[in-house]
Length: 236
Image (cartoon, rainbow, N blue to C red):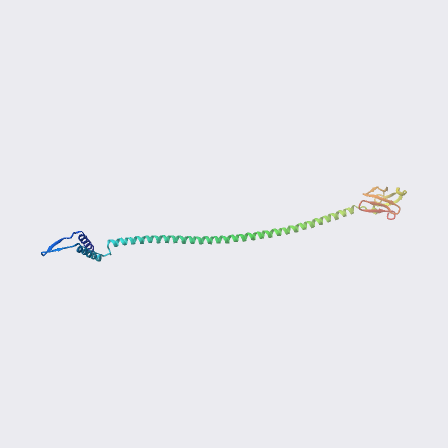
């Protein structure tokens, strides 16, 4: 109803604006309506229309409400987008913290692995050092054994040589010395067989060479290492 009154007022306003100045008689009197009166009347009608216009529920209000709803929807959409971005940032932050913790765990694990490897290397070095010491001890022991064996062999060889040495006083007897000067010869007897033989300087007997013959010193035998003398006083 109110909208109808407003439309009627607007219609009357336009009618007054476009209707030309006219005159008419009322009760025998002629009333003249001027353009100024029409303008005043139209202003009054417009003022009444504006004053009586109710914004609530009007088309203008609906348009404003729609625009506001549109703006609110845009703002809500932007807020939802911001919430989504914030959620993504929070997820990235959590992921970053997890990666940092994982890297920290890996660093600790690698550090532990390095410590274990270092301990293994130290243990291996200690084992090798112990084996080296044992090897040196074995080498020293073998050297001592070899030296002892050499000494034993040398002693055995010396004993063998001593055993191989002939004792002329026990095996032979000087019977006499015959000849003159450098032509002296000695007659000896083998005590085991009783056989006699004549020897001279340079002759070899049982590996010994007759080095000299004299009445005073008897017969001197030499084999390069050992010297033995057989004379009449010591002969049996």
